[in-house]
Image 1 (cartoon, rainbow, N blue to C red):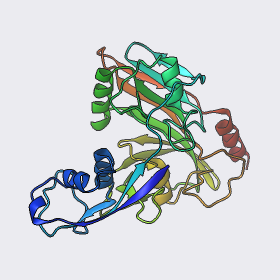
Image 2 (image 1 turned 45 degrees about the vertical axis):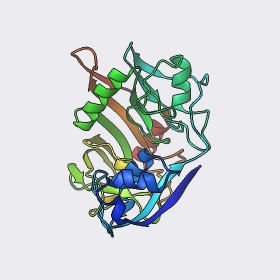
Image 3 (image 1 turned 60 degrees about the vertical axis):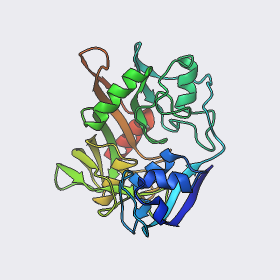
Length: 309
């Protein structure tokens, strides 16, 4: 289960000079340092009421407040015989076409039905362990109800090299989506920082004070009356980035249960968003590789319905 642990402490004289994350780890021994660092990065832990970096040195009298989201009761992922749609595989990487509805890694309520469970079974446990026992092999993620491509690492060397590419924004990630409202401009860029909502922690919001930079490039493939068929290319890869950015500019995704309040014109099992194209430099071979998978049948069916409205 996920819990929000409150942070409310004032730094004493004897603790002055310590790193912010190290100090909080000493005070809150039941919370992992990685969880504390993530909360600081997400802006849910504040230093004197303002966002700060983990390596910030605290001073006597500083006030630290906010909350840290922690997971309890789940420590490791187990291999489970679940079929995977493998697009490409070699000794270093495996590229998977994830179906809509599949969670990427174990979490409360999804302990044995995730992509990680299937990956552990398929690879007999021979995958990278940089991200810990709950997220082995996972270099990047896509939402449960988003379909499409992601690359997983089979060893730590490949994982680190792919992670560097993600950090440098050199991985090509293109999505197609169905959204509300037609566009006047046929292409554009949304450059708005994102952070976890302060009141609704499961939501991500545009936050120009404590948010992390997020950039989405989009182009309109078709205007369809009160709807549109678009392509989005990620420059950054924040949680829910496309969903939040498109809502922010007045084009929430069809079927999005979190960021859209409109009833879709056809039955959906989540947002109409598909990670169709993925490209990266192979971690061992000096070669750029690019993969494409078409959207699932329910997406194509929805697009046909919108074309006929």
